[in-house]
Image (cartoon, rainbow, N blue to C red; front, side, top):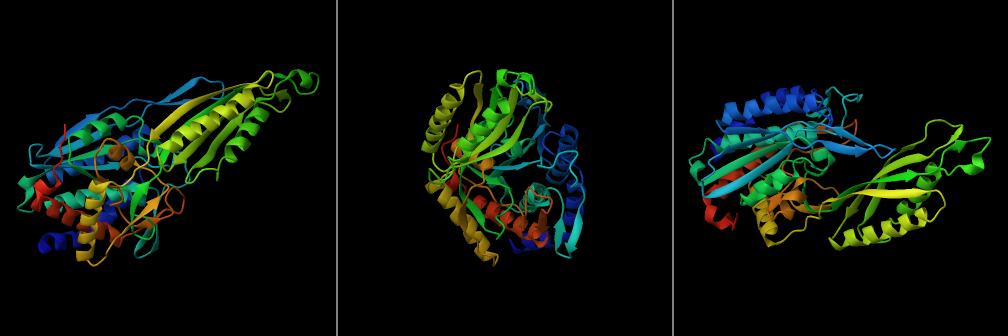
Length: 406
């Protein structure tokens, strides 16, 4: 084992060079060409180094509603599945996403060195660094004498940053065929693991009023933007009313010119929940607010969307896997623990499908989802060594980790 882990240390320079190359390819979720370019590069790297089976899948388009209620479809990048030894006693699912939150026209496109151990760049932590950690760990594991005890599948999906709407069905299907999951989201800023995660839902509110001249016939108009403002205020006031529930208005638009009473408006918002019962409470509160807005003459509000990711809670199977990870990290001299977080990821999806998983095995960095995102570069090697050790320990006792799968 020591020799395998030591071999990863020698990979620091090529890992860093590859990370810069990947990060400087824009792969914002809706930049289909960029997502596919990253996916093609990585799948070729996986196949070349791991001699694995490769499948490429199109996923359903992402649909967003405009202020007038019409649908705007965005074709998403492809999903990649790479696998080896599907008949081995133990089956492990490893997942990571190709997309970032930085659109094609973002000003944040290039990497820069903050010091000799810190690199700033789009997606370096979330999660192109994690994808390289996954590849490096599997490459080390494939050199061990335990390979026949463990088969693995890697999913590289194109839409995690928008809730994985196109890849959710594939994630759920693969969850049924595996014993546990390893996910390469970045570690928490302090290097620790995420444990329990909040659930998430994305919603759109559409407002219709009555257009009129802003001067001559203002009294005949019904202002959709003002109705939206009332809705936004009411939704924001729900924050703090239920433990762990947060509601965030992220997008608001409407109207065309200042001399017209606007008859259309739209806002998009996200809800985070702590337990499953929170979803019903939120739906009830939204229904009350909707009824209040719709009681106004000439105003119509319709709500669209749903909760796509339930909360991730730690059962005994999850806790056992976390314990293994912490034991491995202790042996490497960097003991880890887990903390609850308000973030969500594909770990929520896999957990909801019954697959125990640890979902922050990626690199250590910070300021993700901002133009200050950075990675602590030594964590590429450190985290690859951790995952390699996890895989080796799993392969030593495959029967301990097997579950009843479909």
